[in-house]
Structure formats: C-alpha cells, structure tokens
Image 1 (cartoon, rainbow, N blue to C red):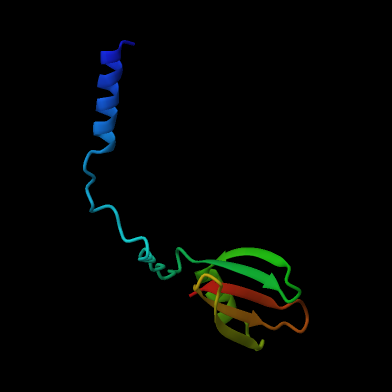
Image 2 (spheres, rainbow, N blue to C red; image 1 turned 90 degrees about the vertical axis):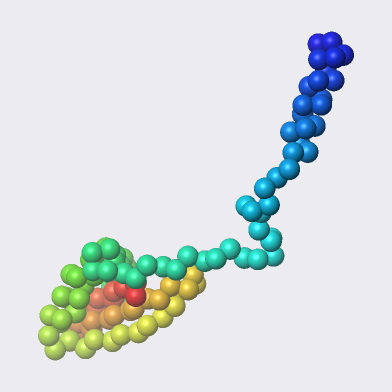
Length: 110
C-alpha cells in the first residue's frame, strides 16, 4: 500500500467516524425505558400451575379447566389469595381442601 492509498484510507475512516449521528435514537441514559404492561390472561392463553399441599408439582392446566374444577369442588373448603410475585405480576392462589386425599393448589395468573 502506498502512502497516498494509506492517507486516503485514513481520511475515509476518519470521515466515517466523525460523521454526524442522528440524535433521535439516543435517549437519556438516566431515563428508564417504559415497561411493557402485561396482557390480561384470557381463558385460552392463561396457563395454571397445579400443586399438592406438599408442594409437589402436578402439572399445567387451562384457566377454563381450573375454573370448572373449582366450581365442581362440591362441599370442599376453598381458600383463595391474591398475591404479587417478585416481577410484579398479580397471581391468584386457590386451594381446594380435600380431607380424603391431597389438597389441590392452583396458581392462576390474574
């Protein structure tokens, strides 16, 4: 590479580095980005995690099936709580007490 070619490469590289930058995409680094709002759970999209009263995972279910199980619990005692998880998501905890077998505890996204 000759001196003229080297000088031309340096000038072109410097021009690229010093080219003006559009300020629109740059945001103030002290401003936190907007947090996306979670979409409300629908019976088709909500996934319910089921556990027993010892904390053993039983599996997943749909919101529709879980609501049907809660409605068909008969005379069983049903306890319900609303809590917020570490990420700020609302959860509904439903416990169906079964004196003859293990309780069913469902974690439902609200």
